[in-house]
Amino acid sequence: MTDVTHPAPQFSPAEAKALAVNHFGVAGEVSPLDSERDQNFRLSTDKDEWILKIVNASEPAGESEFQTALLEHLARIAPGLTVPRLQKTLRDMPLAHATGAAGEDHALRLVSWLPGQPLAETQRTLEQAESLGAALGRLDRALQGFIHPGALRSFDWDIRRGGDARARLHHIHDADDRALLVRMLDHFDAAVAPRLSGLRAQVIHNDANDWNVLVDPDDEQRVTGLIDFGDALYSPLIAEVAVACAYATLDAEDPIGAAARLAAGFHAEYPLREEEVDLLFDLIAMRLVISVSLSAVRKEKTSDNPYLAISEAPAWRLLRRLDRMNRRFATAILRHACGFDAVPGASAIAGWIGDNRKEFAPILDRHPATLAKAIVPYGDPTHPMTVSSAGQQPEKATAWWDAHCAQHGIALGIGPWGEERTVYTSDIFWSRFVEGARRVHHLGLDLFMPAGTKLYTPLDATVKSVEIEEDPLGYGCLVALDHAPEGCPPFVTLWGHLAHEAAARLKPGERLAAGALVGEMGVPAENGGWAPHLHFQISADPQLAARDILGVGEARYLDVWRALFPDAADLAGIPPETFVQTGRTRPRSSPRARRCCCPTCRSPIRSRSSSCAARAPG
Image 1 (cartoon, helix red, strand yellow):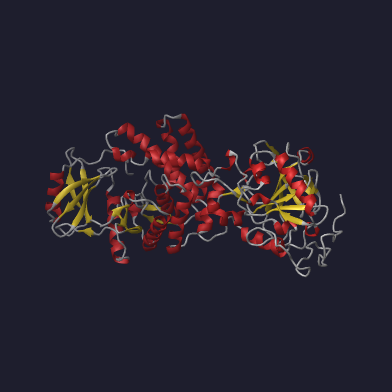
Image 2 (cartoon, helix red, strand yellow):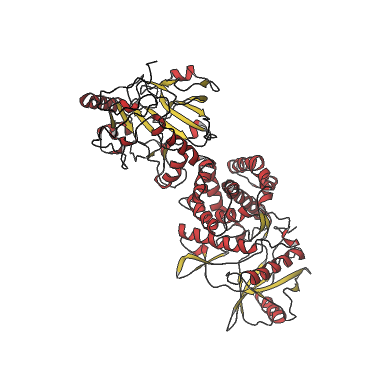
């Protein structure tokens, strides 16, 4: 086993220069390079440039031989890849040996110097992340099927051994930071480590940090080379992506967005599997846990080596951000980037609801298709109703809406899915994914009617949860229902801003038949501080708790939220012709086009006064 805390070799530049001449026949100017546990020198001649690596004495011979075999394999199988190429010794051997001052034996390897600019010295972009992912995909595709006994190494940087970081926790002196690592490790041990053995595994580079990745100096978006295979080993394939993401997302404005682009680049060259992407977020976090815990140990043992802590501070910052994120949302973003459903079954749920939209029980006493409707003006940031709601003045917003409805004969107000709004002024609407961004896009369907309006489930359901949310501009009384209709994956409906009576009446686990009462629209004092309305939302992820379901999302991830939280208009019985693409109502629609969607009434709606008897008031 390699000892990552064993001191690095201590050869002088003059000694390194002599070693290059004596063993490889290469004479040139020598300059030292940073390294974690080995010693590296840049060797410049009139014609070429090289890297002389003096290997740590603790590295077993089999591991050095493995790295040599790996580079020889790549030279044979993928000569077009820009990776270091071996220079053999004067005795036609891949490795030489030298004795250090302490009498320890060190393997020597000379490899070609690759031109390019380290990724660490560039401005990070999403295009660059995607290029890095593609480069790693091509590399690992070339390594597919390659194996060597030295690859089966026991190594602290093997992500499968992430749980070993628990033994290093006493080196973390800050109690909050230590508690953060405990949370990460507990989740890893319970939910991640048991699944790793079922994933594809092969030899991977395992250290695509920003100093081991080279870009074109004239086009910093394009990754041109990968260096330093000293951490290569046999490990889960997805660990290659996770390690690269851990470094590529340090101090990123949107770390999950950068990770998603990197994963997409890899996937385009070497397709990933859903079960691999499902663990990517957790493995990114675990790489960071390994990094900061090892750094803490080394600082106590080798405090004079600044390279050891080169990424410690940004790693801690990223870990704290990841700890605040919902891992299921992060995974949905990563899955979507690779072309998978945001959650398994999401597209099937949306398709089933669309195919069966005429078969659902109405959610109001009168079917919504029969009611005169108008879009609530929350999409207009200067509108008095919007300004009043954003200022937490629900009575003024309600008064304006009631007067507007009375004047224009409106019975039902609609708040469309995806609408951008300025009413979300509470701190709870800050994004946890994109630094400095706010969540402003509505992810449910709002139905505005008077307080006390009764609401009914459109499908058979089981009560998932009933709770009261106290946050200003939150949900107030919140009910979540589980649905498992035949021929459709299970999903959840969320019913927000209800009267508190539902919390006293419904119990988790209670079965509700289609058409059963769910609750009533609440007054502002109990509905989170809004004009009376129902926030009705679908979650394609049945594992999300009610409070975890995003009612408002970031613009950047609207495509992901659309997949994860499909538009509930069909389920609520709102006819498609109610909306145009901008989210506004059509100014007029012909009687031929306007049809009732309830299962017992198929006649055209000929006027606003038309009625439907699908539900008797209950």
